[in-house]
Image 1 (cartoon, rainbow, N blue to C red):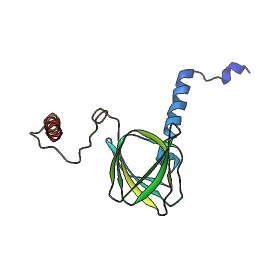
Image 2 (cartoon, helix red, strand yellow):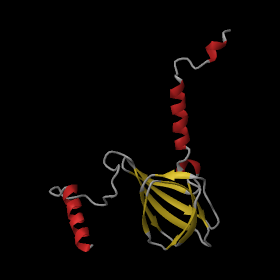
Image 3 (tube, one colour):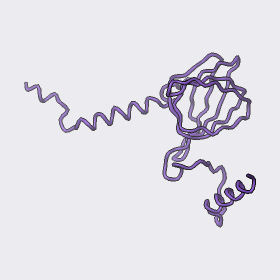
Length: 160
């Protein structure tokens, strides 16, 4: 038997490397690596909504999130080890709403009580990519996104 027959016939090496890189990226998805703390509540082509629960003292594994919004349902005290090795402490109250940039982190609940968060992750499609807004309502047919954007710029200028 010829040993060359055991090579990957018809599969270029770059294809194998691409497949391994996709697997590595997906391995950082919180849902896949930490289903104990992360649950998908809703998913479509524009957003994925996660429910996140941590009991006191619990931590996760290093994972990533795309940009989006976090809504804290409870009071929280946590530490976040970031992808670059820094550790940040965060605390807040029930009802806090935060914009979250694309991130890589390892959270830990350092508080005395469990906490719960709803995280709305924006999908990187052509409609959402690069924008820092999330429409929670339907614009009237006679109003464009540009009109709303221009109005908000004018209001921000007046306020400042």
